[in-house]
Length: 227
Image (tube, rainbow, N blue to C red; front, side):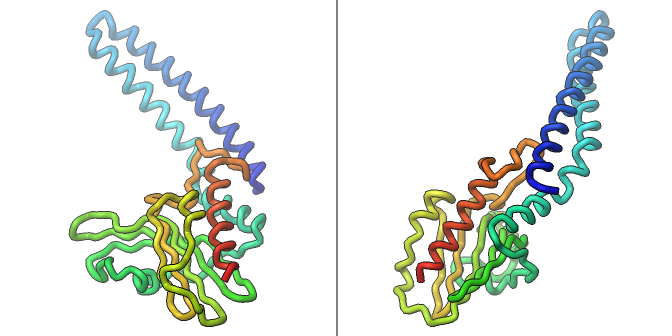
């Protein structure tokens, strides 16, 4: 299903949910009217409860098929438009931690989500969403986009000379990197998924979430192509 078709479906479902909300509110109002002469407070509580119960009961039934694997379906279309490939390799936890000496190596919760990969004449790169949590303190250590790149030549550059100002304009200031002889690891701690989608999110190339995602990936690629 194309992005255009997904967007049409999304708008249609939102209209259905609005109709469900109106019906749920009508049931709530009816319950309040019947109970009001006995107990006004109970009538208000019952109205709120019935409205919310009816709405969320049918909301789940209406949206579950659409929201299931929505991110994967949208991401597949985005990658085609950007001439990128789906990523098959799982992220090795040790590879992520290689450039983060300040992160603990034990007692952590590590989750990763495969985004995409690309190969160019001088390097290849893989993108993941990563969530890292310290299980002892329950602190979130990292939640955002991780890029792992390998170059086909030795990088003759200062390990603190990478200009990431353009990335900070898109993702914020919490960005770091690690450079070895032929590798750059990029850590973008945005405190969220690089691409978050639900029924409220416009599904088009002009939508804020998709536009930001594509801009971010392209900016990373352009930065690495400059080496």
